[in-house]
Length: 337
Image (cartoon, rainbow, N blue to C red; front, side, top):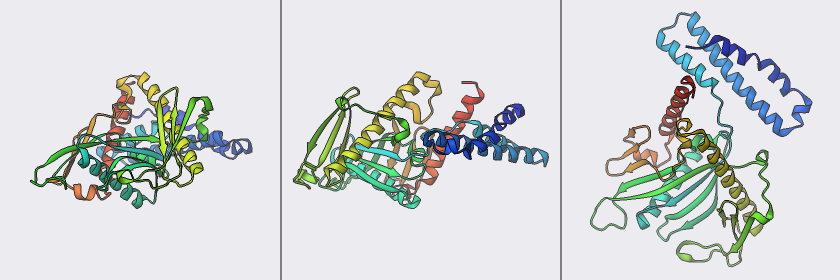
């Protein structure tokens, strides 16, 4: 049941937050302005959901519509992930399965890239280790677009593929895997100042498939954050300066994600949703090519549309994951956890 007093108490802040958005002092403070803007967006969403709920009740709508409106109000009360609107950094690594696993890693990269194209988002490769058959042992890339992290945040985990490999002469189905890791891109508001003494920088020649050098100069950059052991590599640019900039950006994103997961772990397992499971080796999804079937094991969703999914049609899958996460967050909120 919706608590009217609670809703109206929260919405009572809306006018003061609107006033802050027009305050010159707030406008000159970028970090504060973004915080106030996020607060304003939260309150406006709640205000809209509350208005629709009241209309449904006053108009004597059927109980199913009222329950839906009530769920929307409860969902609007949940504070959004503060990193949701950011760009995303994705890392795909080939797992068990040899060359077939590398080919599958390449398929996942193309799947995400095609989806990003439909959204008008830019994909920028930071580092890749390509194989001779057009697969990837590893590829790290940034997705630049409003809400990219919020969209992809449930993709972290082990992805398994079942199909007849191109290298299989007898037509036998093989199982191989690739691991995906997703984290939000860091920005200046995070105030992640890293002392020079905490970073080791190694320079090397950018390599291509089969170990061939794409660039004879030492333009590729590897940065190691000594306190955590986190590593970032960038060799996509021919300029060492640009590779340094992109590498540092990736390293900061890794450190931000590391710190965030540490904080989430302190909350306890019952507070963590799909994004916060922390176990990136967990098998989350199976792609079965002979049956054109994709199964997400976390939410028990099976779709017989694998051909469209690997071609970038991820809308139904991603929506189902977000709805499931929202249901779980609402359940936890109502239970007082």
